[in-house]
Each structure stands twice: as C-alpha cells, then as structure tokens.
Amino acid sequence: MIRRPGRLALVGVLLAGGGLLVTSALRDTLTYYRTPAEVLADPQVARERVRLGGAVVPGSLRRDGDVVVFKLAEAGHEIVVRQRGVPPETFREGEGAVVEGRLSTDGVFRADHVEVRHGNEYRPAGTEPSDAR
Image (cartoon, rainbow, N blue to C red; front, side, top):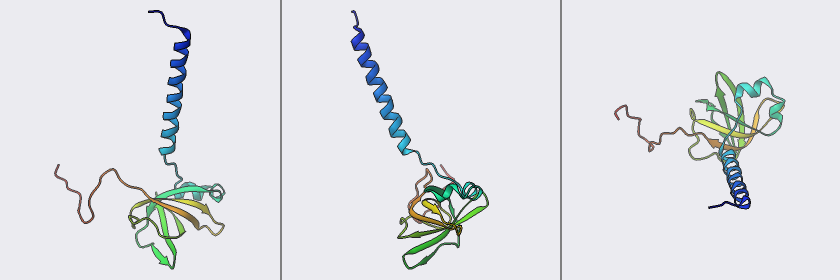
C-alpha cells in the first residue's frame, strides 16, 4: 500500500494539535504559588497579584465582621492575611491554604480568593487515620 505525503502531513498536524491541547490542559491544572519566605525576601514582587501558600497558623484565625484575618506560615516564616468574605467551608487552622491577592505596604497580604490545599487521603469528619491497612 502506497501512502501519500498528504495523509502523513495530516496525521502529523493532528498529532501536533492533540499534543498542544493536552499540554495546554495540563498547564491550567498546575497550581503555582509563592511561599511566605519568597514573598518576604522580595516584597516588591508580591505588590503585583500573586498566589501565596502555606499552613494556617493555629490560634491566628479571627473574624472581624466580613473580614477574616489569619497567618500563613511555611518553614518558619509567617505573613498576616486579610480576606474579605467567607472562606471555604473546609478552611481550618493547621491546614494548608493558597490565597490570591497582593502584599500591601504595611506587610499584610490582602487576599480576594482563598483555596484549601488538600492531602491525597480522604477521611470523613470526626475520624482519625488508621495505622492498620
């Protein structure tokens, strides 16, 4: 069977297009964020909109009307975060979170979006992990 160059070119174009679509879809699922240490080392970068990730410091969460204030920490560095609105229902102290916003000149991160980082293990509320498998 003789293959025509046109068919090979069409197959090549289709494969390249499919590869681009898959690459684009995967890029949108990746979540990049800066740590408190990175933001504190270069606060000028955080004056633009960035994503900041870390663990919510236990005892730091407080609500003041429709504003939620808490600290995000990672590797011994902390940043105070203020967010107007209600955070996700699963948002808790000691859990990981990623916030989007800007670092203000007073050193407080003004967030307009909060996401909870989840581990890869699901447990219903009120249950403890089991060592037995």
